[in-house]
Image 1 (tube, one colour):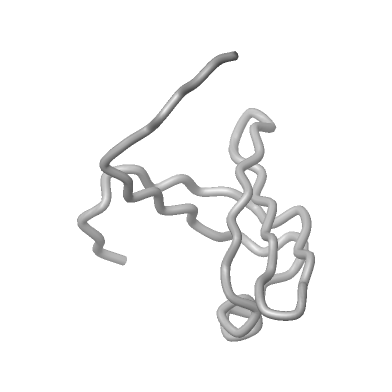
Image 2 (image 1 turned 120 degrees about the horizontal axis):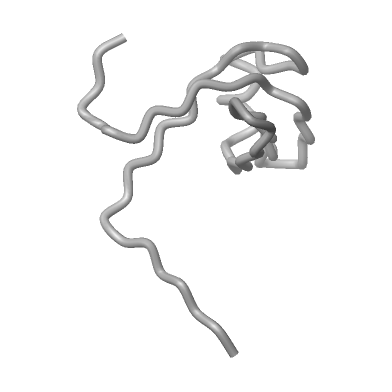
Length: 69
């Protein structure tokens, strides 16, 4: 796999929750940290995502916004 994004995180799917249109995918990274992605239900099915599958979380963002009250 070749990709221009610098933030490629390898992990395993720990949970997939399908909604009417989108799916929530929880990926556990090394050290136990989890990231969550919302993708289309069609993409989740096309990728055959299920618990235990090894995947890559690819983050491509130009901004990270942090706020407090």
